[in-house]
Image 1 (cartoon, rainbow, N blue to C red):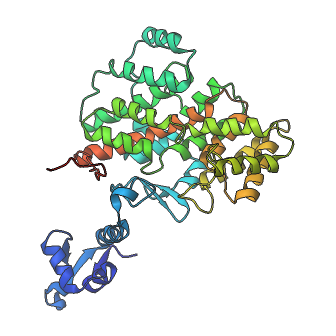
Image 2: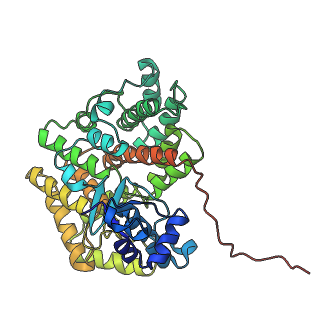
Amino acid sequence: MSGYMTAAEAAAALGISRATLYAYVSRGMLTSSPAGDASAGGGPQSRRYAAAEVRRLARRKADGKRAGKVAQKVLDWGVPVLESSITLIADGKLFYRGQDAVALARHASLEEVAALLWGCPARRVLEASAAPIAVAQWSAWLKLWSAHSPLERALVLLPAAAAQMPRIWAQGRDAQLDTAAQLMRLLAAALICAAPSSEPLHRQLAHAWGLRSRTQADLLRAALVLCADHELNASTFAVRCITSTGMHLFGAAAGGLAALGGPRHGGETTRVAALFEEAAHVDDLHRYLGERLVADEFGATPKLPGFGHPLYPDGDPRARLLLDMLAQHASARSPMDEVDALAHAVMETTGARPTLDYALAAIERVLALPRGAAFTLFATARATGWIAHALEQNADGRLIRPRARYVGEFGDAS
């Protein structure tokens, strides 16, 4: 595919006349350059237009036409509200910087994906200096909060660690990358209640959870990669909003973590775990699901967690890969059959397929990991995406400040 378009091609892509195309250029909405063909005479028709820029403008125009009542729809799986070059979800696939995330999950580490998302060499992440926090201080914090859940512990220790970071407000690229790598490691350490380490994060988690099998550690690696980013979800949008105020990476990540912990976001893994537990003790799985769904119709219970993702109508590719890998490495005595049976029964009953949350909770259950391990996988990985979005938002430099449509009452003017 050519990197440039002729005037005729650009006008056709935008659905406008050539006269309007030239007006776009004069107003600064598009740029053009000489086509390099002296025989063309040097007129507007002989100029060329960057194809990527034309396609970007075409997408904006299409979004504007589809927006309708933007204030009502944009925050509910609606039209795009921010431009980003980090992650794309299209045609049932997930891409990180143009690379298929599922393909990356087959071989890449989270650190390598972090480097891709942050736009730096992998060694920059792998060889970053250790967090400048005294071992005794960190150990004391862990001892104080060891009995709490991974989320509660991380929400306390992340701000505490931020107070110890000497260059946390530095805006230079090198300083921000150092802080980013340290944040990634400190968050993981807080979640698994361990000392910060420069070892690959999937190995840190495997060690903390007593997994000695290389294939099981590889499954954790793939899960981390697939959780790294997912475009403009609730926690990432929160991170970008916080970053746009000028807050440092640790502060933005703490806000993202709080958003992720909600039961409608990363906390859904806990609801899926509860669903597994309930389903494992019923005599008739299809009857159980039918009764639960009937109750849901009348608002008595929440919908089945872990099934049906609005962005993947044909099924979440992240869940597919992880469940396939889990089935390959599950022991004969594991509850993998229960996981498969529940997914099959839900598919027969509702047509809905498993989401990433279901796959993470399945990993926790089948590998007999500690309670909350699914959320720990999610949060450890998603921090890399938050950092990428924070860096991108910093480069943009604008405050995110949406408007609200007032629908309340007005006072009596008389």
